[in-house]
Amino acid sequence: MTDVRRIVVITAGLSDPSSTRLLADLLRDATREALSVREVPAEVEVVELRPLAHALTDHLLTGFASGDLAEAQRKVAEADAVIAVTPVFSASYSGLFKTFFDVLEQGALDGTPVLVAATAGTARHSLVLEHALRPLFSYLHAVVVPTGVFAATEDFGSRSELDRRIARAAGELADLVASREASDRGDQFDRDLAAMGDFENLLRG
Image 1: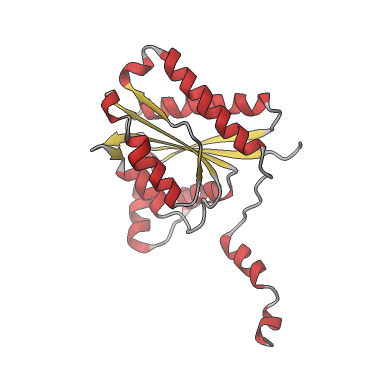
Image 2 (image 1 turned 135 degrees about the vertical axis):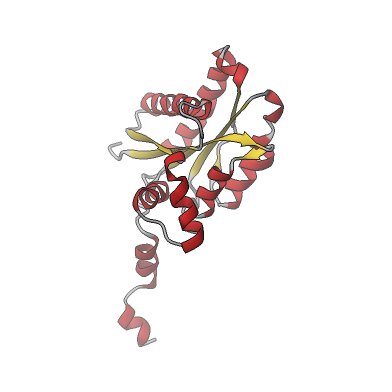
């Protein structure tokens, strides 16, 4: 297998440093290791949403993305898998996290394996994976891996159980990536144009 798989980690932590980014990095490393064990060459890249906050607001108002935001959207659309990590606010994902996925091009995540993860101060928010994150990505037609990863503040102090969950989720994601053809998703306009065929022939009916 020579095709390099592209894995994008989206993290919506607001502080610097943040526990959300820490969990994202742990998932990145575990996924890279799991793919290596399966002899699947991969590039794993982290995209921080915090620096894109103003651009996301502009996108909501204008309908257009540019610069780093447009680049982040392109990376997600072309990814062979996505790891999505959010802090928990008011018992759900953060507004920054939701906004990024709201403004993705329609169909960008169709069939894409996604590992969902979240951080919060206490374990009582752990159901956010099932009542918020999993439904969101199912709606976006992604393939959500069975194991999600939730980390409360206390989990970072005693890492054995957290590390087991991370390894299991990363292994499930790696299995999905290894079983699929490497993505060549390209730009949606180019895909639509190719699907239409020759324009002159279309005019002739």
